[in-house]
Length: 350
Image (tube, rainbow, N blue to C red; front, top):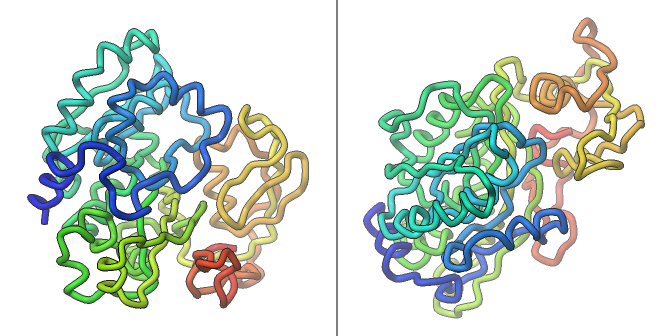
C-alpha cells in the first residue's frame, strides 16, 4: 500500500484537479488573516496540495513544528511564516517527486520570508525514530490528510508522542468513517489513494490515540465528505466519511474522562487572531473576560501548554465532584445534512 500511495501522489496526481472525491481539500474556510500568508507560497507548491483541512493552530511564533507527510510543502511554507525566524518547520515525506517540488522552492521562500527556517526529510511517518529527530523536541506536530494513508497508524501515533515536548500538541486533519470498512474498500487502490480506503472508524481512532498516550483527543471541526463518482459511491455502500481536525495534547496527567473539580478559566483575550473568543475545540468557545467552567482535562490543556500565559486559572484539583456534565460516547461528527449527530456530545469532550 505504501508503494501505491507513492505512485498515486508522485506520478498519477499532477494537481488538485486530478482528485476524484472531495476528501483532499480544505475542510475549513481559510481565515482572512491567513490569506496573505498563503499568497506568498509558490503557485506550483500550492497546486500540488492534497490536504483535507487547515493545520494552523494559534500561538506558533518561535515553535518547532514537524509536518508529517508534508508533500510539496504548502503547509510547511505557511507554518514557516507563523513560527518566524526563531522557529523551525521540518517536513517529512516518503514521495521523492513531492519532495523535489518542496526543495526546489526553498530558496524562493527564504527570500520571500526573509529567513531560511525549513528543512525536508525523506522517510516514512511509521518510522520517525529512524530520522534525525530528537525525542521531546517539537512544540507542535501537524499532518494534513495523511494518517489515513499510513499502513501502521499506531506506530505513527507512538512516534508523535515520543517527539512532542511535554505540553506539546498533535494538531491534524484527517478522514474518518462512521463504521469499520470492509476489505474490498480498504484495499481498493483509488479509494485508498483518495484517503477513504484507509480511513479509521472514528471510535477506533480514539482507542488508538489513548493507547499511544493521548488520553483525551479533542475534536476541533468536521464536515461530511461527498463521493461524487458513482462507481466509487457504490463500492462504499452506506458508509459515511468525514473530514475532521483533532488536537491531542501530550500531557501525562490527563484522564480518560472529563472529571469535574469545580474549576474555571478566564481567557485574557490576548491571542491576536482571537481577541474576543477563543475557539479551543468544537465544544469550547471561550469568551474573553468571562468565567468559563471547565473539566480537569481542559484546565490542564490550557494551563500546561503554550496557552498558559493567555488564561487565568480558577480552582485546583483539591476537590472532585464526579463526571463533568455533558460527556458522551456517540459519533462526534455533524450529520451530512448539517444537523447535529444524534446522541449528544463527543467522547471525552465536555
